Image (cartoon, rainbow, N blue to C red; front, top):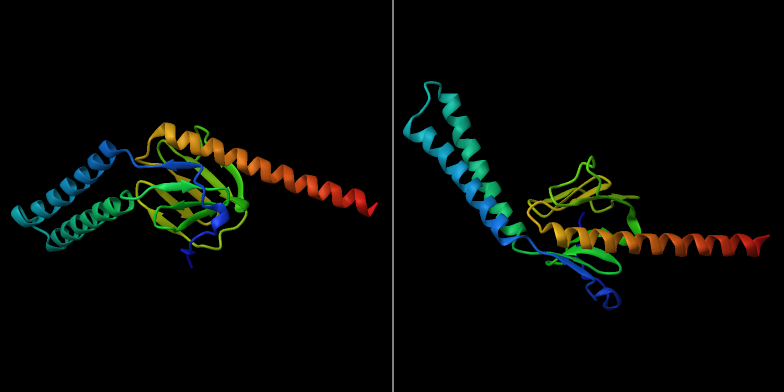
Length: 182
């Protein structure tokens, strides 16, 4: 189940924003629509000899057009980072900051283009995909795609600093507790 509840007033100050790049958004939508249209055109104007292949082309064309609409809807919004959560502009929580274990921006990380990968301690919110913007699969969250590289890098760095601050605060509390108990 995905948590779409609004966050509390204490964490509403937005630290960073990732907005989809308008030219990349337009290019992605146009290319997917063109591909879907061509697949349907081929299936209807020059039908293959095999009827099942024609049905396959029609289904694939329809799926591609559906994907282009999903991309259009997902990239109409933006991602916002607060002290508590990474969320999209509709209020859907992508990841809670306390769940972030690591931020991967390396070359060999399985991450979206111009993006980064978050590794979470747990993911109670389930899997989700907003094409071109972010995805969540198990304990991994990929952010990026048709976003600006500079905005995404800045958000990743801020997120990494917040995660480090939280980790240091937790280890400081743990060392204080262990000193008091001895």
